[in-house]
Image 1 (cartoon, one colour):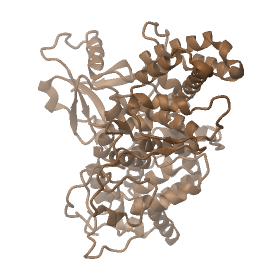
Image 2 (tube, helix red, strand yellow):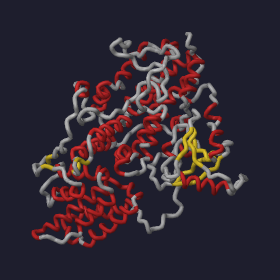
Image 3 (cartoon, rainbow, N blue to C red):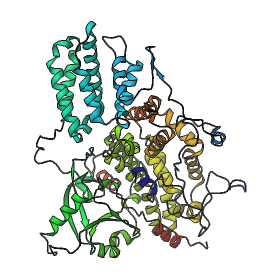
Image 4 (tube, rainbow, N blue to C red):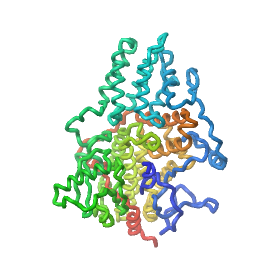
Length: 619
């Protein structure tokens, strides 16, 4: 199953699959503040809880019309869907902005050659030239049609070609140097996971350093190459790993104050983490494992641990690894699956058991028992919570390598690479949505609950002011959860000013015309900002499914350019540092720990039970 499909099916995610036929509503829900009742010609959406999620969700559908830019609202889009799509045609050629000729569709093995022929040679082209854009396009997207190792091998072959007359060989070597520099600047730490690619880069680097006399005009580039190769810390298969590697904590694992207060750093597949694996009786073993470890490796570590415990060392049946969600849903993981730690649900846990004991697995007691009462949010000002949300989400957003967005959507076409940092941010987005509902439904007093609803709307407003659209979107979605929107008495006590404010928020998050209102607001913002990341993945999915990467054996250069443009937009969002003044007082540190270690209920059935206890359907 693709990672995006897991997100679509995950309860509470903002991108669930198409919901099933509407079920009868258990109780009358609060009418949306911004939408009139549906007319008979326009049936209303489901009002009750849906198995795939709740509230208003982004719905991914394969485009039925020709490919267009995701940002284009296209008022005639509905009419276009009724037309027959045109027959496939060869992808258009992209023309270089300096007039050096079109970039015609070519076979995958010829695209690098076409790029090297167009790159600047001694200042013929300047920055911003179409060749520079083509270079960035290919470096960002080459893995869709050519593995990274093969791409670098082709680069190596171009460098060692015999010299031609009239300096053609020297120009080609300079072009290879330019591609290698841009490749290293783009990939950086990701190359630590590419053993074979690291070996090719080191060989190419040594060849370039031998020919330094050819690059007297490129001394700065040579120095930059030397620094990049040293900084990247390339991993080669025959080299021994460094000793005493630091173990990194994942949030939601080992809820320790010292861990959650640390600044977040990017995860790589080779990083080691601690994780608990539970037994059917809810005892557990703590293992140390690579983030990218396979299920088979995890089970081997668990078996080794159990041999030193009082458990019987020999088992009649082999162990299997199972994920158990707070709702009781169970799924058996296949031995070959990798990177399972970052794909777990919010309150899901790993269990090791035999097939005979599979049916006896139940969620941990703390995931089932609910204790109402006041939490930290009732004692903290909304400005402090909003600022800490923005600061934490900025850290998580900065940890995502821009190529993770491409790998997450296109991994089925180009092979699997870890996207741990992106998956953690998506989990966090779902976590914030459920945090909103959890806090409201654990507040038993009607007056306090109405005051908390007002505070959450304030927090959303401040997050929007901070240009943290991820937190803003997640809070609005959480307030539109069916278990919250049905609390009629609570919403009636909300002041009119905040009802109007929330109506504006609903309009801003309205998915009509391909999220036109949100895109217009986002376009007016200047960096730094945190976008609503699931919508970026939706755009990339449409780009992917709307046209083929290879058509008649030729690379669709226009598609590569559209994908790279979306990645460059993410790069622009993070082009400036975020500056928030946060105090280091004990109270602020307590708020920081609370925001980074949210305790949430992600079981929709349990949320509805709490909702009906607070306001029964008869009221």
